[in-house]
Length: 519
View 1 (cartoon, rainbow, N blue to C red):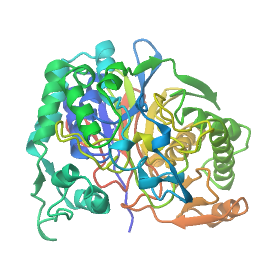
View 2 (cartoon, rainbow, N blue to C red):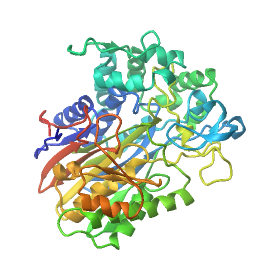
View 3 (cartoon, rainbow, N blue to C red):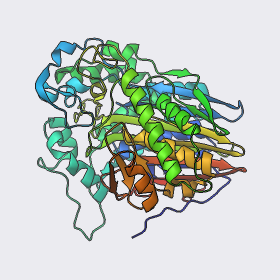
View 4 (cartoon, rainbow, N blue to C red):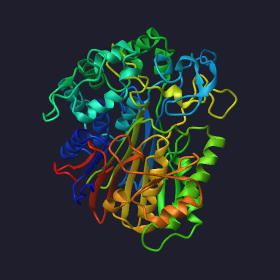
């Protein structure tokens, strides 16, 4: 079996997202005269409805923005923070054992940092979108939220992939009555109507629709200063968490200059600070000193990727806090990239952290809540130790790149796997002049600070042998579920033509041109 995705070139704008319906919402905004910022905002809210276990208004993240008329990049950080009233003493460690969720922290009694309202951090996504719109938006805010509102009113369609995702977290969702009421049927995952039938079952998202409508009418700060803030804080506190209305009121997403660096004639702009941007820069610094293969990635290239990522993760673990993941668990993140016909670009990553976040739903708002507290090390005295009113260390790595007449915006979901994937995608373009189709179909490895290299089994034998000389290698297929590698989405602009692509194994992912054709 061979799986591939078709990539076409167009003079129109393109939205590449992990869910086709969300990409269509963004493409429709481009067709209505909006630019990449407008399309990104519409896509952001829409994708939070159609794959709510990956991201949503109660999540956070970051993005990179290229403004073609200014010839410059902007970084926007809307990451989560710990609540001011959080008390680390309320997260006592068990005597032994490691968490079996995303990060192999020492376990906390009752998994209070992983699941439930005690795991909820201050969300930042809505404020981030509001600040981006205030500075660069061209279409009214309410119009950009209208696709998400309509989707929420229709309800979430439970096709086979939605049912699979819900089934993977049924036991955790059943612990919260509101999450169970939204996603489960009689305490079990919702069934698809017969294996030969088309999906027609929908989940009731009407409460979320009302909250989105309130955001559309009152603006982004309604999530932080208005009734929504009061309801959200009350719901979290009623379930034992520490998030307060004051935490929300004090929250501010922020623009900054990007972290910019050159690599073999290619200019990169990435997110600075507590993100994976500095980790990518460190990896590519090591790679730049290595001789690579002449025309296609081979043993030398994949060896350089291994050494660069190993060194970068060592730095990350020592100076930024440990955020490697345990194998076999899905991160709850989504990424999409946008390019418009004028060349503006957005590379945007947003997340609830774990799949289904804290597995808690706010009954008053209909929002699935994040578990951003799990980003912190529960052991005190370390760089990333749990503390009150502290920004979370994120895995997100949205990237802008420019080489000659080629400009691209890449990013991915997949937790610890993100920076490994984005670094290789960037190299495929920078070092081997690959177009978007070749870049996204090229086999990858995952090197994320662990003891082993995870390698695509289709890599040539000499490449695998070279990797095994460095450290143990586990080969695997590129599959639909779970993902052994990160799930990227990207757009490219070359000679005035735009293209887009998503992870080839993503059953929902697609790139949509503003003239309604798949790109």
